[in-house]
Length: 461
Image 1 (cartoon, rainbow, N blue to C red):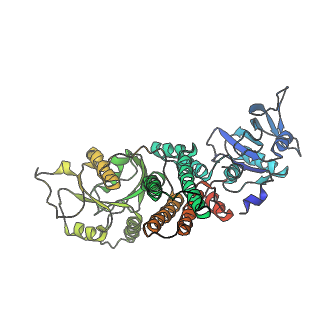
Image 2: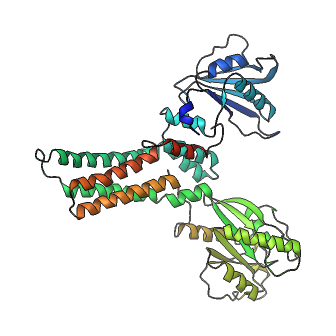
Image 3: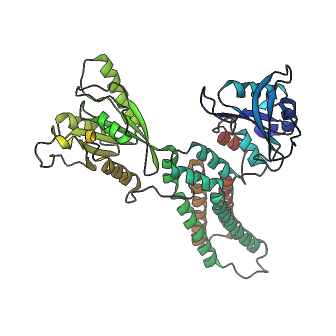
């Protein structure tokens, strides 16, 4: 993208979702040296409203070429450096929908602005020192958060909580490196290096790194969620289970086997974790071509799922068809759901084979057993922790990879000390760890890395 080479240009973009007949407000955002001049050319503010920073003006947006009024709007002014990008920023707050914001954006581009690339506003905030790299990435997580816990963790990142921890770790490594290098350069003038103290410092740094890395799995769950496939023979109550779980009638429920001919999806949040539930077509041998297509799609959904709910009918018990399905999915994380227990004539437990999977009993049509199912899912996800942790910060995959590299380098320093190798060997891996920690916050960064990170942002952010 080469965005760092074009910082001097004024950029513009629509900063809100564009949906016909949806949303009361649409925002067009500009940032750069000519943002205020472009705003003055488009915006007519009646009376003597002052064009001061951090003020909102009322007026009309007009096409400078035709003087035609495009919209009645508000104009928000933020002069550098007191803005998101630390450049002059203006926002046109138009009526929602499509046409108003598109016409305003077109006029901004005609007046010399350039259409912003994905994430370019936030990239400028980073390059101008307004944010570090972890804060910038947390903004994406906050915008895309699908649960309260995900938003809370993202907000902690925006507030710099992860930054503080990483920069403290890097500072501690720099202190050790400075001391080691001082003893290399001035060995005759300094007392011997206190290796036990250095060892303790490395232990503390590594302990903190391992603690932060412990949030990676939870953070990935909060960000990406869990894909769960409901699998079973036809008419065992898979669609009823989906409807009871989602508290809606997403799937058609009848007494006829093979009713579901395609994969039906529902989005839920369980214990703070976003869950995409897939109700698949009942899997059986059939000559119906449409049903065969549905079954093939079910197989694809199961292949992509993180967790499988193998569902069977309580009255029928464990059948040969259930055994076949189990052999197909048993290598995946699995929960066995015994449904329609309310229809059991015999109060004795359903006879089940010895399988390595949790068993949950439900009566989906009566909305019974859903809470037990959710607890079983959380138990698989978190082990003994049956609730999503309220994490202040989490690390994403890029940050975790850099932390792992830093941990490996510091562990090598420990081995170097243990092997009593010269101090020069210590500095090699210390510098690697310092560099890797700097990559997390952006203290050590390349343009290609920035392009990769910010290309995942939406345009206008």
